[in-house]
Structures are given as structure tokens and as C-alpha cells.
Length: 128
Image 1 (cartoon, rainbow, N blue to C red):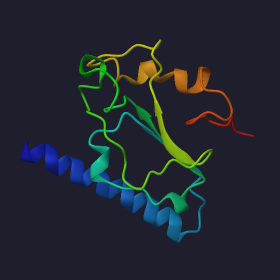
Image 2 (cartoon, rainbow, N blue to C red):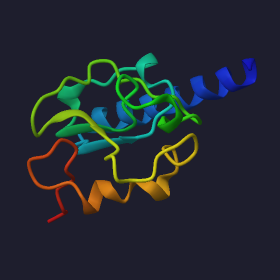
Image 3 (cartoon, helix red, strand yellow):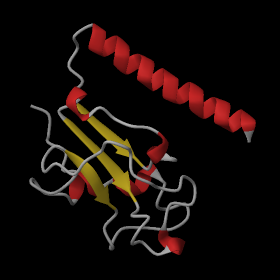
Image 4 (cartoon, rainbow, N blue to C red):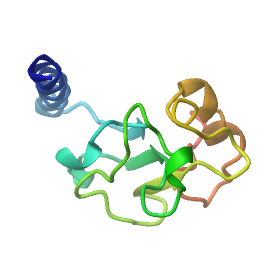
């Protein structure tokens, strides 16, 4: 378990380092899409660094336990406030595959691009 903790710390530090390097080079960060993160509430996002920040996954408060992501149990990223068209969480729709593994599999997140409409939380604007 200690080895896994060390790997997670390295990954978090690498992401943080990459963001710091891009920011120091005055490179706009654009949009940050966080899909089925593990233990997301142990970290935070500076919303002002990004155009948009969305976290996608199961709702740990409302989704029945047997449908939740069992690979990477969900919790909200700190500082991820619900700001319409800017940041928040988008949850797996009821009619999409859900379960211990299904709620974590990237293959089951096509709904982000096919089901969400402009104005809905988590909508991804097409590139121009």
C-alpha cells in the first residue's frame, strides 16, 4: 500500500509540476477535464488557472453503492465550485453503463461528448 501511495504522490507532483511550467511560460491552460479520478478530494484545483474545470464520474452521495466506481471511489476535487459554464461535476446519466468497473472504464464516458448539450454541466465545447 505504501508503494501505491508513493506512486500517487509522484503522479500528483508531476501534474502539478507540468501546470507550474506551463503557467510560468504564460501558456494558457484552457479546459481541464477530470474523468473518474481516484481520491480526488485529496487534491485541489485553482479554478482561476483554467477556462473550465469539470469532474466526471459517479455521485458518491446519490448513486447506489453497487453502481459506483469501485476501482477509484469518487469524491469531489477541492475548490471545484459549481459555477455555471465554468466548473463543477457532471455525473454518469442513469441510462449509461454503471457498476464497480463500468463506472471507471473510459470506454463508458462517450456520453460526455454525445449526450451533454450546450449549457449542461460538463458540456465540452467543440474546438474551433
